Length: 289
Image 1: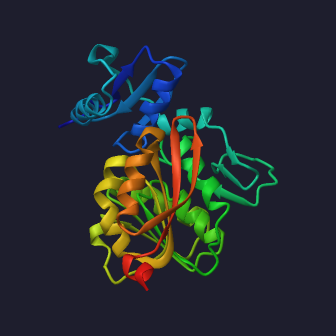
Image 2 (image 1 turned 30 degrees about the vertical axis):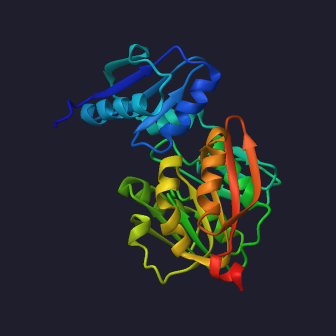
Image 3 (image 1 turned 90 degrees about the vertical axis):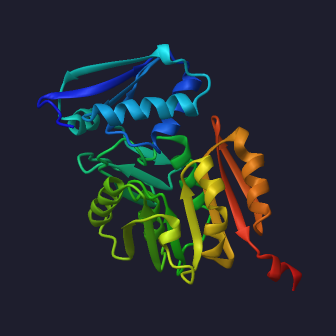
C-alpha cells in the first residue's frame, strides 16, 4: 500500500506493569518493528506500513494471553527521524566490565575488555534487553579462540561481532529478516570485522555438512523448539550451544527438548523473567562409545 508522506502509524499499549513491559519488549525484539520506545507504564510502537502494524497487533495478542485488545490503541502521527529520536535516548550498555555496547555518536571511556559499536535501524539486539545481556554474560565465560561460530537470528550482529573480537576463527550470522541482515552487515563493517559472513537465511538453508563449534541462538521459544534438530545437525560433537529469548517458565520445556537431542545442560543464567541456557553437545553415538 502507499504510505502517506510525512506520517507514520503507531500502536500505544497501556496501562502496563513493569513486568508486562519487560515481556512485551522481549517479544518485540523478535518481531518486525520499525521502532518502539518504553514509558513508565506503556509502550509505543511505530511503523510506516499500517498493514504490518495491524498484523503485529494480532501477533502480540496471540503471544500474550494477558494482553487485552482494549489496551492497544492505534493512531497516525507526523513522521519524524525516528533513528535520530532513538539515538537521543539511547544509553550505552556495559556488561560486567566485559563488553561495552555503544553507538557511533557516543564518546565513552570504559575499562571494558571489548567495545562494540552498534547503530541499529530497529530497536533490537542492542544489549538493552535482558536476553542479549544474558547471552553476552554467558559468552564472557567461554573460549572462542580458533572456534567456528553460528549466530542464529543475528539481529544487529552484536553476538557475532563479539565472537570475532574474542578470537573466533570464523562466524556465520544468519537472520530470516533481510532488514536485520543489512543492519548486521553495516555493524560488522563499523567494527572492522573481517571473519563474519552475514546472510539472510533460515537454519535449514545452512549446509548440513557445515559444522560449528559454538552456536549462539537468541531467538524465541517457538523457534528454538522447532529448530532443535536442525541446530544439532550443524553442531560439532562436544560443541557448545547457548540459547536465550526464553522466559524462565519455558526453561524445563526447552531443557527436555534439547536433552532428548543429545545436549547436556551445563549452566543457566537468569535476569528478571528471562533466562539463558548453555548446553554441550554429546550425540547419543558418542555417549554410547
